[in-house]
Image (cartoon, rainbow over all chains, first blue to last red; front, side, top):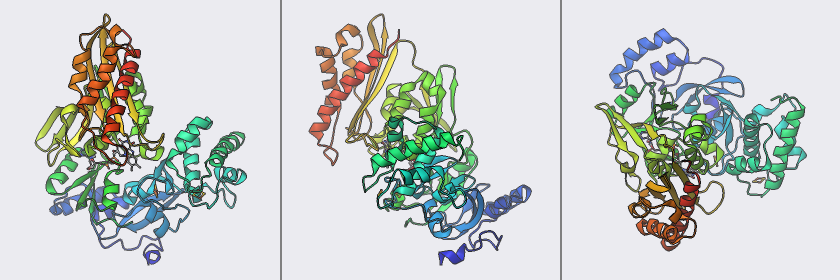
Length: 216
Length: 293
Ligand SMILES: Cc1cc2nc3c(=O)[nH]c(=O)nc-3n(C[C@H](O)[C@H](O)[C@H](O)COP(=O)(O)OP(=O)(O)OC[C@H]3O[C@@H](n4cnc5c(N)ncnc54)[C@H](O)[C@@H]3O)c2cc1C
Ligand code: FES
Ligand code: FES
């Protein structure tokens, strides 16, 4: 059912039921019109500020893995929910759903954050990267490859979050020390206890990225 | 995830946010959301209007004006940690931020959210109070400035009135002769909520302690200043405060005596009091070691 709603995300469609005119027009990028609309909605006691109604779907634009996606969301939906259930990007996992385990780690503007405690609407205008976005065509991305080479998972449930945390670390710090790796990865729990191999994989990924000239 | 419904507002100016807060009786501000969203998910609170601070310009700026460091409410913990201004003028604030949660949370959670949640274990509070920080609060009626020490009223209760927004934190840049440190004890090394914590600030001139402040966290309903400990050290030569000295021991005891710890899953009150004494002594020694006259 969720699938139907956001099936044709590339088509403009008719907009959501609860879409505020201002929100809609802003997302269409028509600056002048949105000013006009703001005057129209001022009767709603919400002058100027963009407002998305409760219990209704509003159109937002997310940039996920380099693609602009226009989709209908409720304000209360988490980014993790939207990625998985609306966009079908099920690589991002949800476990604790309260910011404590790291399974839902994605990059927002290049830095790792928990998608379960980020509202999808808050990610509008940001660049979101999920584990799917690390693929290089049909080939594994560098960090994914390093996890494979170092056997850094058992059940695999935490793995995409771990991979995204390592990706975020290496983007900020291409040659982290083992201490830096341990500290940075502390927000990603692994119930299978594969930590030693995860740290090895992070070091391996750093090597691989170094030898490929820091690409990706 | 099942979260009760709310209207989501995204103002672009502080004025708009203030107007929205005034218009909505139960409106709540959303900064990083690491406290708010967890509460909403657990059904601990619900709101009809959620007003996002993320699009408001300048709320996440750090700057220096004369001898004061200005920290916008929406500055994240990782911004504090990496800010060259903080590192240059008040590194100890970055050190306190480094003890918070995890990388993902530090990339998201804000210093203003940390203060406004007003958990007694909030890691940015003790050190900011010890450094004599003030906060600037704005409302539709105007602006007021408050000592951060007076902001925390009770467990999770602040001096913020309905319709008010914390705009920024003002930290006097510590003058020559100042040393400060933050000591936190938790049950593990990472993602570690304080069982007890102590921030210490000392100001020394000609070998005498001219000013001091000890602030404890997680051992009272709010972050709490120990008046007793400051009274013991101000006016004393710092030679009497060396590690292991009777006065040094007394200081730890005095801070612990001002604590009002509870028993909970992280530790008994008795245990917390003992830990507080030790943390206070360590913080004192470290602060003294950082004094450059
Ligand atoms: C897994 C986990 C671990 C954590 N570990 C720690 C830790 O080690 N140490 C620690 O101190 N905290 C910790 N926290 C708590 C939390 O991350 C911090 O308190 C954080 O700084 C809150 O900031 P925020 O921006 O996310 O606040 P939000 O959740 O956005 O807001 C918190 C509250 O403050 C109000 N508010 C926010 N900004 C303003 C403003 N400008 N004016 C008025 N009101 C405002 C909001 O309405 C809300 O009620 C942890 C949380 C989680 C989920
Ligand atoms: S599912 Fe998001 S941190 Fe656990
Ligand atoms: S591999 Fe199973 S939880 Fe990490």
